[in-house]
Length: 148
Image 1 (cartoon, rainbow, N blue to C red):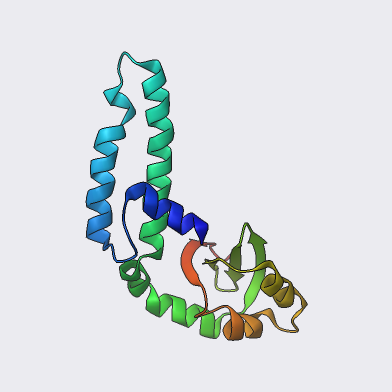
Image 2: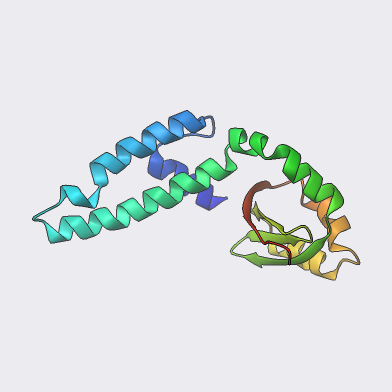
């Protein structure tokens, strides 16, 4: 959850920012910090490159968890969590990454390690996730693997 706060702080937005707001703010920040503005200033250019990378990462992350984005993928998400079993999952820095049989992958932000351990030890990770993960953590679609 700290990651979300850091990203919002970097872009100076709150949790009510719309996709349109995020895009406008992102473009304005990138205009100010774009490395091409620092033609004869190598140090400034390097700092701008680092800031640009952070801004791009923050923007993409905040777009992925935005309610408008989640609404767009709600049907696909609901179908996945209700009909497709979990084939793999792991925790990395409080982000639970869950791979489903249908190839969809979702990340759940802020999952405590003890919840992850309970999921590892559960008879059915899919059932555990339905009861303790889905609906309890901010999530985002993080990828899709094509089935053979």
